[in-house]
Length: 184
Image 1 (cartoon, one colour):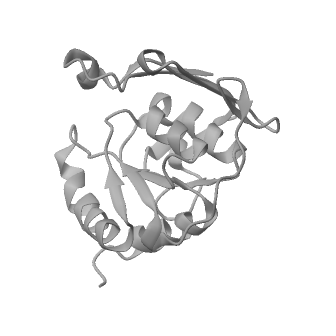
Image 2: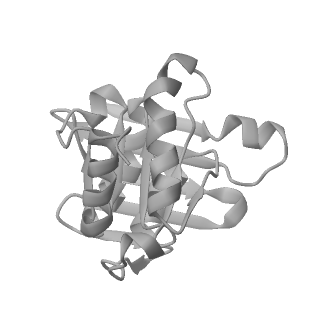
């Protein structure tokens, strides 16, 4: 199956904000095996193939530096189209703001995942995304040495759209936040 998002960041595009992506992934048995995320206004091309690594503008991406959660910059996206998810999302976002150095919201999930693979961000979390939003970017993260799961640590992220993607240490912190969103 092909998962294609010809305009990731539609609202960004309509408002002239250049954080816009194109995401294409090939899936076999509901798992991404090849993917491309393009950011045409930013002149970025990120590619990955299962077992062959991830690349940005032709340069291989390597597992990026290990950081402590208190120094991590993590990307997120708000469930703006499905307000019913806010009760689940907001406690996790609050705890993430307390736990990590900072949060970012660019408004294009495929690019957030690509930047997580490239080390610009140390992780990414969001709820209720579509397969075309996450398939290519998640493969980039995995091929760059990161982990991708759903919010309970399982492998249903491609179907549920509930995704945690990060370096291994930051992924563990995200799992803790998602599993116990109201604990302090």
